[in-house]
Structures are given as structure tokens and as C-alpha cells.
Length: 218
Ligand code: DX5
Ligand code: ZN
Image (cartoon, rainbow, N blue to C red; front, side):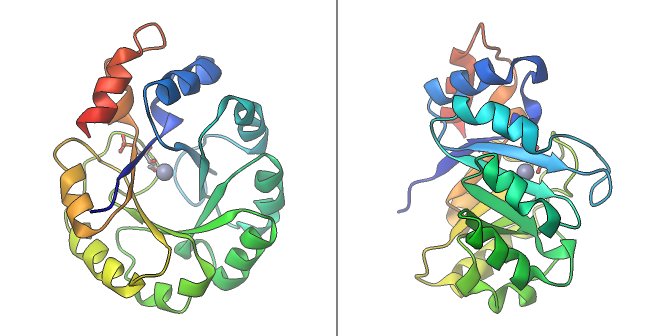
């Protein structure tokens, strides 16, 4: 059996306290730190840019996993790479030239991730398998934390796992992960689970043990 990594999304953290929040979740045993970048165009919400990523980078001892919900992607790749992204994930739906985008991400020295909206099938992934280190399967429509898990994605993840075979590609699940939905995704073949509300709910930097309990419950 494969070991499951937990990647808390700081979209659900206290925005006035990112340094302390990151230290708390890492002390409590998270594996990666997931950063949701939104542009108010590709998704109907606005969050962070490269300066925020650069500011939190020194606080991250694990992996900075940057999820770009932006279009276009290419003009910003170097800025996010310089801000210290370890994994840089772009959406298949963000433009017609995903192959070029993935090439540029690897060229900038990052691991390349490819994210799929819930309505997107796997056809567009097959010809990109040599270009990617991670596929992020969205189990909500991107834009907001705290949404309900879309169960129809389970079968997609199973088919993706079969398509990947023994290639060293992570399958990351993003959206609506809870202690109830996490085992479904692990069984379907996922190995990285993003969780925002499920990790941060009930805790704080003054009461970080709750984050640890939440992480272990997923
Ligand atoms: C959604 C983001 C997710 C989200 C996860 O657009 O990409 O990372 O914050 O939040 P939860 O776990 O609360 O669904
Ligand atoms: Zn995300």
C-alpha cells in the first residue's frame, strides 16, 4: 500500500498569521503545504501572488505546492518559480498550449503538475504523461474552500491510476476531503490529499494540537 501525504490548503488558515500557521501545521505532521493562487478570471475569487509565496517560503520546511487557478499561466511561471515553488500546477483548461506550459514549468526548475476540473475527462492527459510529475484531480469546482465533495470523480481517479501505470506521477485530490471522503480517494489510487477546512477547523496557532488531530483523522 502506498503512503498518503496530507497537504493542508492555507486558504483556510488565518491570513494575518501565515508564518505561524505554517509552522503549526508542519509541527503537527503535515507533508506538503498547498497554496491556492486565484486570479478572479479563471476562477471567481482572488487570493495570492508570487510575493506572498516568496514571503512564506522561508517558513516552509516541507514542500511548497502551488496550485495555479489562473489564465494565462505562462507569463507568471518564472515569478512563481523564483518565489520558491517546489510543485507548480497549472490547469488543463487554462489554455490551448498545456504542453508548452508544462515544459516551461520544468524548465524553471519546478515539478510540473496538471490540474483537471470536475467536468474535464482524461483524454487530454494521455499525451502529457511524460511531461508531468503530478495530476491534481479537483473534487470540487475550484474557487472556494469548504465545498462539497463530488463523488463522480472517484471513477476518474481509478482510470487515471490505471493510465499512469508505474510512472512516478503523484495523484493529488483537491476539494471536499474529510475523514469520510479521504479513504475513498486513497482506495481509488490517490497519494496526496489536499485539505483546507478539514485541517484548520476548530484549531488555531494557540491550539495547534487540533490541527494534528485533524491531520491524523484524514
Ligand atoms: C479550491 C482549492 C482547494 C480548497 C480546498 O479551489 O483549490 O485547495 O481550498 O478546500 P477544502 O478542503 O475546504 O475543500
Ligand atoms: Zn487547491
